[in-house]
Length: 168
Image 1 (cartoon, rainbow, N blue to C red):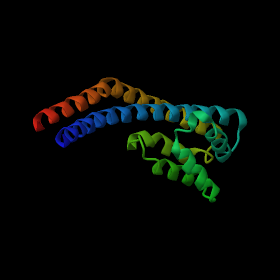
Image 2 (image 1 turned 180 degrees about the horizontal axis):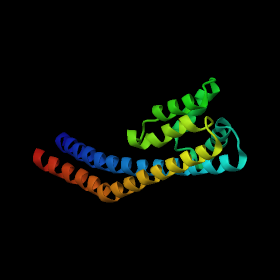
Image 3 (image 1 turned 45 degrees about the vertical axis):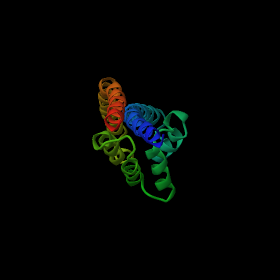
Image 4 (image 1 turned 180 degrees about the vertical axis):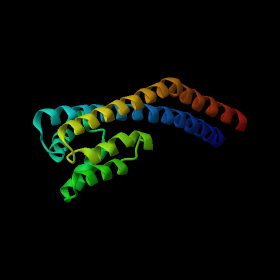
């Protein structure tokens, strides 16, 4: 009896690992979508309000659609401790490592050094480039999700079933 319970748990672990891998792909795509949307909103607000980057970040980070972006929380914490905006945002982006890879972070890191340090047009151009790159990364993530998401789920189920049969 205990053997069958153990086999069931082993099979279940394999299945859950497959679903976890697929979920990771989905969360990454969602996070990239939110980051691109945040950059677009930042660009729009900057063009119309001419507020400082710190004020814009404070305003935008409170919107519900950006709650899935922990780098905003980390950046606000650093700003609250008196860090200058470029260092605070770079710290926030670097510290947020869930569902990102290094290439996903690059546009945000580039923007962190430009916001508030150059003229308005240069800032808007940098934000536009960053948004475009994040959208490209999001499209790649969406393609990966479409092509590999179901595969990971199927592999998890298949590996679980194969392992259970092997151990029987």
